[in-house]
Image 1 (cartoon, rainbow, N blue to C red):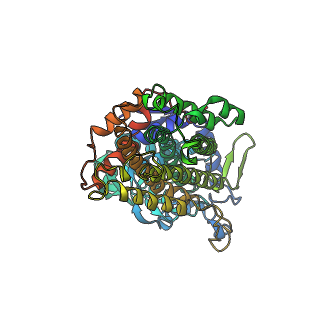
Image 2: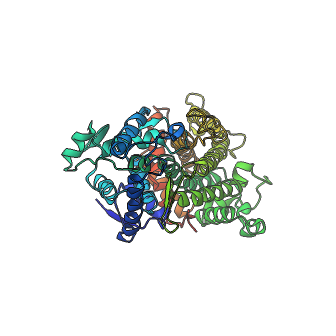
Image 3: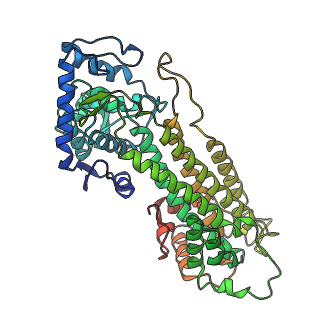
Length: 512
């Protein structure tokens, strides 16, 4: 297993994507350890003192006015974790749980949480040895921290809860023992430090971002293929058009599509004498739509990169000022906004792709392709209902794209009276990404079949490579057959990134 060394406060999106996709082990750079130890010493002093410090020697939330005796601080932290293990629903995927753990490490590594180095070491060891807490998907409202899901993580660190180890779910203490790890007894403020934070919401938002960006890249490929299949014009891809507007995403999308279509004999065959003046918007405006979505995704990426490097628990130890201060960094509003932005981008990329599929199966619009792309229409239905499926997926994503961050509700006896709903705002992105990958998978099937009907005229070399990759797993659709496996195979190519990255054409990058 690859081990990445990360510097809290300076971790990049590329490193986080590597953690997510490859499930790397992680260790924090040793430069962060002195600050962690300094903050811990300040918490230890506060716990031994007489002054009430929230979460150190007091109750929590509405019970913050209740003073806790020094000898009860360990029990206080254990009770906090166990009482907050209220998550419900299916367990989240292992990759998401591990990313959440890494994000918690990064937050603690900022040296403002007051935990012992022992907790840092334990989280690193759990990642290295593959002890993954079982985290129920539902229960966080995205403020006061992702309390329930993070509590299920912390419970395993204490030897409670459940964890997955070597493919088997077992009690937390058994998983720790099997991996040769020893649970910890939480000290002052440590339970609160583990569960106050946005790491669950941020992990899911990052996963959605990574999937959305790869889908956007894939959409440039499938749209270029559809453009050639319906013998569309490349005039709207002229660079001057996009530079005159000035949006980065649009400029890059247009340039990528130009490169993908360069050398297409199909395109050259209808430059002269084509009676059509303009193509429908789903062909002509692809750079404007997907380019805008790319710009929105980059805005969300900036927010999430900052959040991944942030200290988000409460209270925070301000070592230079010598203070322990209660604040609100656990409120996931930035993550909620970012998740809603990603959702909008996913819905729009799918919406315009679905219209291209509708166009290519319609002989009135597809420039003489056979109805539903079948060589024997009437007896065969071809891709008729595959297009209907994409309409269903598009509609579902439109509903899922409704904002979550505006749906606040007061909780915890009105102490937590405004929340972000970032957790389920971010969680819904996974289904949206899957829906979009299937829409694009169907477009890949239809566009490839459409280009094949243009034989002997070939498309560009780059797009011929895409078609060959599809045909290695899905044969040409002649007479009707059971189509569902074809859709899944094509969608898997989209999800794997093979379509986005297998053309030999440089794709737009999420970073600067």
